[in-house]
Every structure is written in C-alpha cells, then in structure tokens.
Image 1 (tube, rainbow, N blue to C red):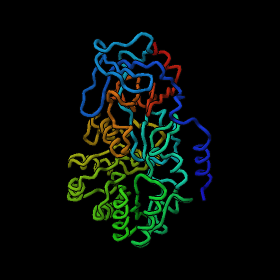
Image 2 (cartoon, helix red, strand yellow; image 1 turned 180 degrees about the vertical axis):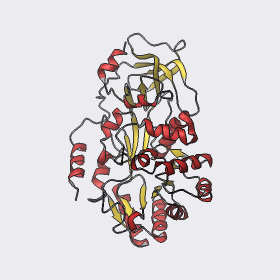
Image 3 (tube, rainbow, N blue to C red; image 1 turned 180 degrees about the horizontal axis):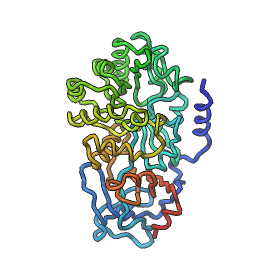
Image 4 (tube, rainbow, N blue to C red; image 1 turned 120 degrees about the horizontal axis):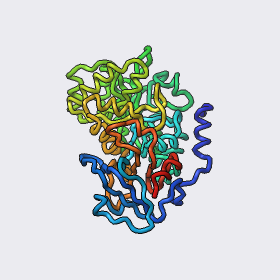
Length: 395
C-alpha cells in the first residue's frame, strides 16, 4: 500500500497532463527555430562561439555550424546571441522522483533521469521506455523497489510503503528479480547498507540477484558505501556502484573497481551535506586517478538535494580531477550511456531530435547558470522555464 507521499505523487502522475506526440509543448517549434551562441555538440568537441543550431518544425536538427555558413530561412524565430550557450542537457543517473517532481527537474536542465528506488506503481507512472512521455518531463528509466534483506536498509526508514523487496535466500532473490522484470523495470538495484547493525543480503543472495538480472538482460547497480560491501558487490559481478563510498577505500580495491571497468555514480554533494563529504571526495579523486568512469548523479531526495541540475555536484566532479569540461561530459554523454535510451546520446547530431538546453552564459565559467535554463528541448518538445526571459532574447 502506498503511503501519503507515494499516493500524492502517483495522483500527480495521473493528473491528465498532455502527452508527447501532440506537439503541445510549452514553447512551440512549428516553423522551426534557430539557436545562436556558443555551441557545444558534446563529447570531445570544443565549444564554438558564434554558431547556429537550426531546428525544423518537428524539433529535429537541420544544420549545425558557424553563423556565417548556416543560412536561417526568413520567418524562423531566432533565440540567443553572443554569450548564449547551446549544448546537450544533463542526465541525472540517481534520483528518487517521489521526493522531487520530474517536471521541476526538466525546468532545471535535466533531459533524462534514472529513478533508483520507487514502489512499482510510481515507477510505472514515470517510466519512459516503450511509452509516450508526459510533456514537461525528462526521459526516465526506473529500477522499481530496491532489493534488500528483511528489515534491511531502507525498508524501515524512508523506504517504507513499497520502496523495497526483501530477499533472504537465492531462491527469494531470483523471485524478486522475476517480479521486477514483470513490473517492467530498466535495471535492478540492490542495497548493501550495514550501518546501524542493519542486515544486508549475503554473498549468495547478491550473486543470485546479479545472475537473474543478467539472464533477463538487466544491469545491476549496488548501494555499497563500505569497502566490505563494495567487495561483495564486485564479487557478485554488479554493473555499477550507485554512490562514491563514504568509507575510505584501500588502493587495491580502487584498482579492482578500475579493472572491473564499472562506472561509479558520484552523489558527492549529498555526502557533504550529510557531513562525510571529505572522505567521499577523497575516494572520488582516487577513482578518477585510477581511470574509473565517474558519472554525474545527485541522489535527489537525500540531504541537500533539489530537482534540476546541481552546479555543486558538477564542481565536485571537477575537483575530483575531471575539470569542468570533464564534469560536463560526465553529466551528458557518460550519463546518457547509463540511461540507455536512444533518444538521448549526450550529443547534438544533425537529423536527430536533440535533448538540449539553452543557457544564458557559459556553464564552464559559471555552473550556476544551470539553475535557470532559458529553454529545454527533449524528445521533440520544448519547455521555457521563464517565458518572459526567453522572449527578451527571441527575435
């Protein structure tokens, strides 16, 4: 049974908002659109000043290039100019939408998210794959309920009312994965959190979860914050760690993570908000130095978080050794790969419907501009968080 928070969220998801495909986004694209300013097409590209991204009436990219070489047809609206930034939007690989509405995330520059813990009905309400997506929402992948031991984290705290499923044997682990597959999840999350003396799934249970998920074609992400639990996750063959741990990792374990080739989701800022950020930041720096892919994620719903792109998390990634451009790649192309939805690649490509943002200034100089994007496009629909501000630079 859903608690009051979950019920309210589910009601909002079913409130009759318009669906994608009816071209009813808050900013019309009929007639095309020309975006002018500094353009970063993503990946290893270098941002280019005085470029144009020309969109057709369907919201697909018709041309990208220097303003001197791209002819904007008469009558096409132009947005931006010197100082404006156009580039891929951010994907947050670790959110909990029950604690932060998806629409607020989109207005804050997020084009995609992964919900890593929600009751089945909530997860089904926000999931994007294989379904139309509500206008004003980012593309969303879901894990559904976390798998944990009976009485384990977070079943007795924030995870009451359907946010978890208990596993206490290999057989129950396999059954829990089958239930998640039936729910239609995109990945499986297992919680290995022993703090406060909580029970955690044992090695056999974790291995059974991973084997069953892989047999169903689903990746497994692990909540593991200590060296012991990270080792248990690696022993079982998980595909990802959904946090940088907050217990200092020995060098040999960092190297093992690197050798396994699995990414680690950052969520560094929330540890700072909770008082253990220095250790987490040290682990993040060690992981980056070892070549581990560090991917942008905030753990929306936890301490110090709010919907939308978090400039502080981008700076934490930069400080870990990625630099600001590396942090932006972590939050776009690397994060898009974790979302695994062909509609978002973290790059701008001719012929594609881009998942992009228009910002008022260069985010490499001032990441705080992510808080107030001028325009967000995703899956052929455009959202103007502040229409009055956008109107001032539309001509």
